[in-house]
Length: 66
Image (cartoon, rainbow, N blue to C red; front, side, top):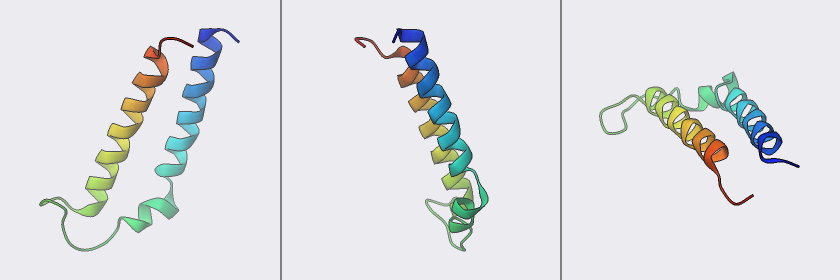
């Protein structure tokens, strides 16, 4: 399997992971009162997941030595 096909498969898997993480059942877990470092938990969850997905996509595309 060449590098482009493998990167495409990784990106497709990350897309599906993102769909699952931004879907209702998991979002409802973050809908709580209170704050995390002054930020509502839902916003903190959305920001953290978004950051995690961007980092994972960068890793999947820029990975060397396959």
